[in-house]
Image 1 (cartoon, rainbow, N blue to C red):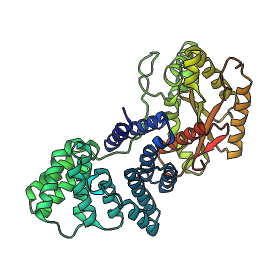
Image 2 (image 1 turned 135 degrees about the horizontal axis):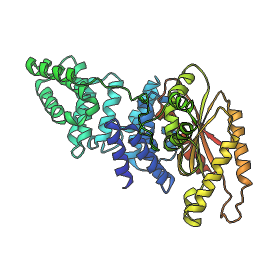
Image 3 (image 1 turned 30 degrees about the vertical axis):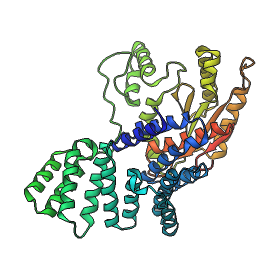
Image 4 (image 1 turned 90 degrees about the horizontal axis):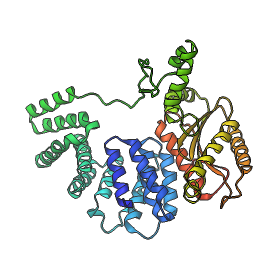
Amino acid sequence: MNQQQQIKQGQQLLRQGLVSNALKTWLDGLSQSTNIPEELPYWVVLGGYFRAAGQAERALSLHQHAYGLMGSDAYLRSWLEMQLCLDLLALDQAALAQQALQRACQFADLLCCPILQELLSQIYSALGQDEASANALESAIQLYQDDALAVAQCSLDLLKVYARLPKVRAERLKVAIDVANRHLPLLKDQSRPMCIQLGHACQMLGRDEDAARYFKQALQLPTPKHTKKSKPRRLAMVEYKLQQITSDIEIEMLREKNAAQHQHVKQLETAGFRDEITGLYNSRYLAMRWDDLHQQAQQGTALCLLSIGINLFASISEVLGKDAALLMYIQIGQILQAQCPDDAILVTSGTGSFELILLKHERASVEGIVAAVQDKIAKIEQAYLPEPLSVSAGGAYFIANEARDVFQLRANLALFLAQRQETKQICWDGEA
């Protein structure tokens, strides 16, 4: 899959509400980039995601970083300028946003690019220019010939813009209704708002029966819910593999049983919450603990996330073999566990990588932990290694009301920059 396909696939996944899959696709592409200019499109789309998640300052920071990688490609420059314009508008910097918009509109083929037309519609909406926004969306729909999901999203956005206009020609409404209706099944997570907008559009045309049908259909559809981990159920079977996440309370209740049951609980924990290679907790454990961590962070407790990766792990595996690489993975996992405070949560996030969650720890304390880990790793026997063994770390502190995906993404991006800079110190989010 080439870069363009990876960017498009991530955008399609995002339109379907598959946020984690979209981010993974883009992060994979970022890590596979063979040179710095190839990274630019990934920074652009990741910045757009941060802005949509309500973190305009973070988005602006990523887009400014991308600007530093900019070459002579006129399309990429226009795309990035539009993203910067939206960032600045979200930060109430209207004058600077207008300058970015003017630079973006210098692209000669602006009217032929659906992605730029869609972004242009968002800019015009933010500026309160709904007629211009509608025109841009109409152009985008015509240009998105091979992307039905994009057409579906644009048709929904277009109906929303029409609803804000004082008057819309009947011909425009009819076309928009037809397009939206044909693409309605594609927007599973947004079917309800699409039906509501279709009902309003039909009302504007005086088609009351059609409007009633769409409104009735909307009422029959479930209200979109924010993804939230469901509470784990009581275990009903004694198996070595957990079918669902087992809560701490359930485990404690089982621990109160006899010695055989206690041993069985250990086996359940190993099967469900433990990494088979290192014995450390895995990402499922962090998912179970997240609600409690999130609640404490929302109350003002400092919550730090470190994303940690073994440097050159893939190369070590290729040169020395998988067994030697796994041995290092286990040794470093043991060092991390030994250096972690008692109240820290250490989990594996993939072979060769870890996540460390710390409550009530200031930056100096966190940096001291990482420094101690690096010192211990340096003492591992590594005469047979082509390069000294070390880890890189990217750190982020929780920002009020942000989603877990965004929090983890900030730490992951910081780790990416730390590994690229080959630094043994923590690369903090927003400071690279």
